[in-house]
Length: 238
Image (cartoon, rainbow, N blue to C red):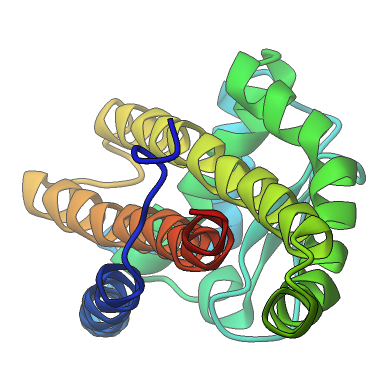
């Protein structure tokens, strides 16, 4: 069993570098796409806020508010307050990108209303992951120091366990995000009063695909970090 858990330091470090480079490219590509589609006016002339309100209404959701929040790319759905929070670049913008993002966030509201299992599971994990995230901030570095100076693996093991929970949370987020995009695109595809051409729909699909890729690389980044710290723990024990 110990042989199976052996993770070379160099391999773990190389994995982190590769994932970091891929993440940089994906983030750059996503921001480039968002900027491109933000400059393409929606033929229907609807703002992001109006698109969100229509999607909520079409799904029979009347207890969710659409509000504007500060920041750039800060769009999110809050299940606790039942609010679709849109950044200024999305809330007031009448672009293809704004419509796609607004519909995506409403996709989360639809998931909540329909008790989508992955969203329910993810929401239940939030309190535990918040504690785990706090633990990783001090247990990993302190754990490594104790490991090298005292050969005590206990603190590092706690840190690696907490990081494993955070990593699991990142992967559980993936089906939630992909499903929200699928719900958004299906609704946009059936509402020609919102997106009036096939070209607009394809642009929205492209924007949401690149947005989803940022979550994929974030999950891979969390996994690479887990492998890196686990390499200290398991290599020392061999």
